[in-house]
Length: 133
Image 1 (cartoon, rainbow, N blue to C red):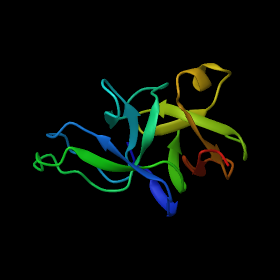
Image 2 (image 1 turned 60 degrees about the horizontal axis):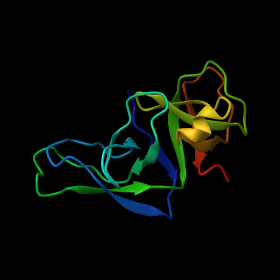
Image 3 (image 1 turned 90 degrees about the horizontal axis):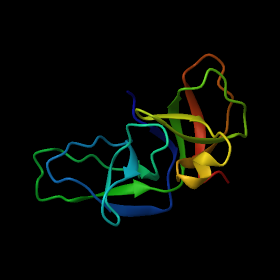
Image 4 (image 1 turned 45 degrees about the vertical axis):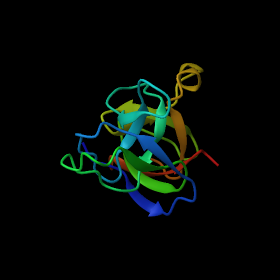
């Protein structure tokens, strides 16, 4: 599991509530969980996108209960798909990876969050723009 690497800095960063005893590396793709504005590391295909962390949260920092999450910017991310064409919309694919958006299901569950800015050509990491613009 590799976390996302920032290529172009984000302009929109939101604070998400997280479990105080959990370690969260910088670059972690987050999913919405439980109550309003609560997030955790994404682990499954179809998770609802809550941002990519722009800071690290150490498990021993129990007084910290929020992390900053990017909602835009350009990132290098791992893929689950064998081939991704440039320009296609992508969704959370599970275990900190992205997959090609399939039909309306990814729109409905909130997992679609980026557009590929390069084709996957054998390398498992591609450049994506959050928000798809």
